[in-house]
Structures are given as C-alpha cells and as structure tokens.
Length: 426
Image 1 (tube, rainbow, N blue to C red):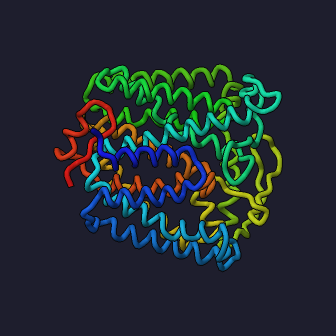
Image 2 (image 1 turned 135 degrees about the vertical axis):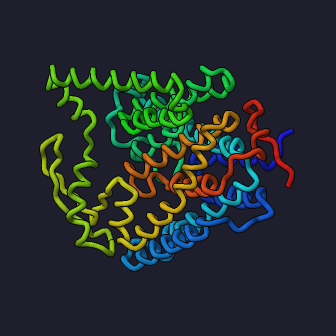
Image 3 (image 1 turned 30 degrees about the vertical axis):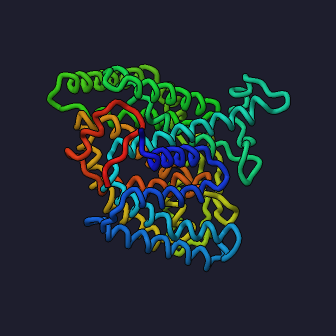
C-alpha cells in the first residue's frame, strides 16, 4: 500500500493545480508536510546557503520597497501577499533542498505531474464554463471566441480573468508532449508516455482556443531534453543533425526564392514584448529604485504604431526580471539574479546527469519540462502571473534539483513501473 503521506501530497499538488480557493493555505500545508516527510532535516551544502541568504535579501527588499512606495499596505490582502513574498522564495528553496535528501526523482516527478494535470483540468473547466456552458454558448465558441481578452472563471476572487493567466496553466502539460511521444515509442514507460501525449495534445488544443503562442513555444522547447539523452557518437545523433541541417538549407532556399515568405515568418514570430524591451533598456536607468514610475514610448514594429508604456497606469513588462526592476528597482533584482546564478548550474548539472541515466530518465524528462515551462513564464509573463503560485513553486523545484543527487539510492525506486511512489524508510 502506498504511503498515506505521499497520497496526501499528491492530492495537495493536484488541488493546487486546480487553483481552488485557499490554494496558498494549501501550499503552506504542503510545504509543512514535505518538511515532515524529509526529516531529519539537514543544512544544505554550498552554494545553497548563500543562495538562501540572497533570496531572503530579495524578499525583504522587495517587501520594504513595495511598502515604501505605497504599492502594498500593511493590512488586508496586501498583508497576505507581503507574507508570501517574505516566506516562500527562500522557504521553497530550503524545503526543496530538504526534500532532495529523502524523495527520489521519481517521487518529485509524480508530484509535479499531479500539479500539471490539475492545472490542465482547470484550464479546460474554465474554457467550458466561459465558452460552452454560458447562455447561448456553443462548442464552436471555443474557437470563434479565441481572440477574447478575458473569460469567466468558475471560482476565485474575480468573476473573470485575463485569458493569458488561464492559458499558462496548460503549459506544463504542453512541455510533456514530445517527451511523452518518446517514452511511448520506446515502450519501457508506455503507459506514462501515452498519458503525457494525451495531456500534451489537450494542452495544445487549449492554447489554440486562447489564440496563444507560448504554449506552442513550450511544446517545441520541451523536446530539447530528448536531445541531451543522445550521445554525440550515436548514429541517431548524426542523423538528427543531418535532418536539422537539411531543414535549415531548405528554409534558406525558400526565403531566397520568395522574400515575402520571410516577411510573413517574421510577422508570425514577432511579439510586442520585444519592442517593449527595446524601449525599456534606455529608459530603465531613470528609475533605479522602482515604484512603478517607469514610462516610455516605443514603436510596435509589426503594426507600425506608437506604443506607450506607463507603469503608473498598471502596465506590465511581461518579463519577471523587468517587472521586478520596474516595481522595486535594482537591489532586489540583483539579489534574485545572483541567487539564480548560484542554483541553476548545479541544478542543470544534476538534470543532465539524470537524463543520461536509463533509470532516472523518465522523471528527469518530467522535471525538465517543468523547468522549461518556468523559463518561458519568467521571460514572457509578468511577475506573479495569475495568482503567483507557479512562481513560488519554482523555487521548491530549484532547491530539489540543486541539492539532489542521481545515484544508486534512488535508482531502484525509479526503475519500478510508473505508479504512485512508495515511501522510503526514515
């Protein structure tokens, strides 16, 4: 029989993915349960202690500057947001590092799979609630109304939500589409692979219903970990390079023959975030201490119109690093960047090692998809996108990867057929 604590954790992560009311309260409970599951607690090895100090500096300076500028008040909903910002970045990293001492990669992957499937279910519940089950609603409205900017949601503090905040919930499942195809093709993890394929296709369809492009970007990037599993000396690697080279030559030839095709391709790939960043860079030094005072003008190259950015009117940069700077200035941003610079190299090294292991490859593919999704969200979505839950959960994953080890202790557990993980002796 599966460990009851593990089952409770799986249920908790799935419910967090559904974004039910009190999800943040559930998040704190999950962190406490993970700490209990990870006992005895140990102080993490370098460089995590320094990263923890930097994240504490980030959280404290972010909160103080926000209060100083009047962006947060010491009461009501703002107080809850302030406490979350103070506790969850460093707390999530520390809990993730503790969990790495007791949980296998397979067990952590199952927790994220539960969250991703819950988030995908939430996305489709919102689509059905806001497009099909409304008065005069129709199944065709899923596509006919794909350009709408907002959509009614079945629960939450607001009756409607921006479609981009809903769409990003399907990104995790989208990142698992290509790994799922690979696992199903190899046959060793066919049931898991088929599950990931089905959820990935549902995520892509949801992105199309929202006229979103980030989901498609996540699908493409989700195939990158598969390349890391191939040895450069293998024939499949050489064939893959040949196919990529041939596709590149064919595209170059097509662009030379039909220049207008290149213009259409650029228009398809272009995003106003790029133009916003071009305007941000020269204007940013004028407001080094934040306060949501940044404003500038830039040109939208695709529509050839003047675009005005004014943070005082609630405009967002749709980039976590830029939004941190606009809100609270350079000091919190510097602390955050340094903490990531310390944690990412060991995390990526462990992930690369796990992808090269036959036993740990499947859970490593799942966790790599989560990391890719987080990278896309940080680069193309605002700070605290949607309710901010995925932003804070990312620190827990980073702590787990940076402190984790791929070794013989976990290989026996990872080699079992895909089913909810069993507990380990404490």
